[in-house]
Image 1 (cartoon, rainbow, N blue to C red):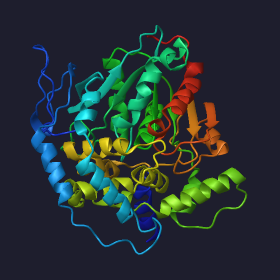
Image 2 (cartoon, rainbow, N blue to C red):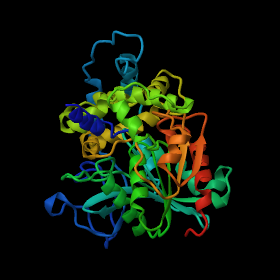
Image 3 (cartoon, helix red, strand yellow):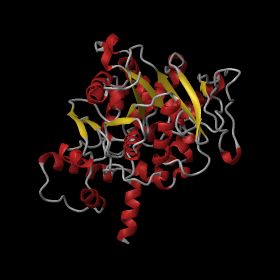
Length: 442
């Protein structure tokens, strides 16, 4: 019985924690020699190395339907506590819904998004949406940045400018990056897998195909949340040309610590102060992962998330306590790091692409405990943000990443670090990858 419990807990702890036909999201008119996006046999798409330009335009009817659904929300009773211990507070979600229906402007975000170079290419039968911005500076280091859940490529938009054009943001030309930001299959404007098998290992392999297809024979990778595990697995796979990785939510937890946490055992003796803090943070996370248990075991049952935009918003907001506090303050008129529009750009994108269920399936597909070491041997860099799910101790990081080239503790930022603190996050990436720049191609 304990073995079954451990197996179940291992599955649900593998957390942090697209469109089948592009539905109502219109793709830009393609060049005459490009392959149209369409289904192929077995639910896949015709394989082609073509890279097709992509734009977003949501029909007015879809936006009107969204507003109608928000206004028709049937509200629950108010929580019976004065804090967030029962989840997203009624006042927070009602404030969000009011702003969403009355003031939020998707077109403003859509127009901004369409100023950024976006593309689609087919890899292993799925259409992968990605942003690709080359730096004007010679010798820029190519980097692929991977998001997580409930985030998306939107998390990374604020760092594109500072990474690709550092001199415009007080940096140095030699710190420039060429930036690639893909959407995980089942997320955003990537297609939704119609068969099983799109787990983090497969996504990691697909990302190397993408970088090689873009002409990069040397590059680095970065990720947080699902992006962290995908990036770690790229490090394990060691594709030719991957110089190193960076994580802002690294997998460092020793096996015996993970097992003790899974079994709700007492804290082991002999832990340092940093390790004890990490234990306490992880013990809280392991005990408050209801969303991940649902998605990891019964994702298709979450049908209501595809039917109620307010229900979807509440579910996404409740990912972690610190992020919920941050977004709650924004809707209470005290924004810090994330604004109301930041939160709603992302939630609205999930709604309009109808990806609540397809994105949840990644938890069902995953086979890796999220926070444990994966066996990365290539150069690795870690930035620890104070409001992340747990603060990785340097002692654990050195064990998990034997080729650790950079370890930094910063003084602000949380789970969505690039989104919340773009300037600080940019500085971390510049510092982390400086040792690996020699000999890269621009």
